[in-house]
Length: 125
Image 1: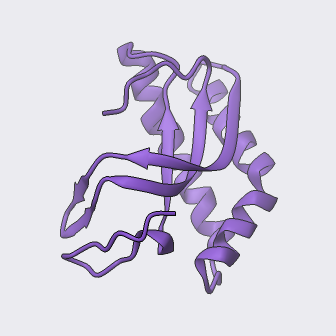
Image 2 (image 1 turned 60 degrees about the vertical axis):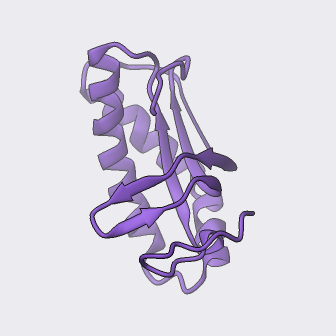
């Protein structure tokens, strides 16, 4: 895993698990669904990770609950009227630099909870 440092916030990359939701395609509907799924999976993950005291414990909790997160994603898609196949995994993934408020995450490899909707052919950046 990358040993990069977030200069603004002092957050080492190895202490972060990122969320990466990949849409079925670049269509407006698929991209909108991606955002809905992101929000619901993020809420579910936050509940699952309450009390996790280390990145390793958080990764273990996520790994043990991939089926729960996949169910949340699939149910969200179904309720949005866009049922699709959903794959969820915990994996090393390259990310470009991302600025979110005061937090800057430099480009590099991060452990990520990946949620792939349908064919997973949407471009995210």
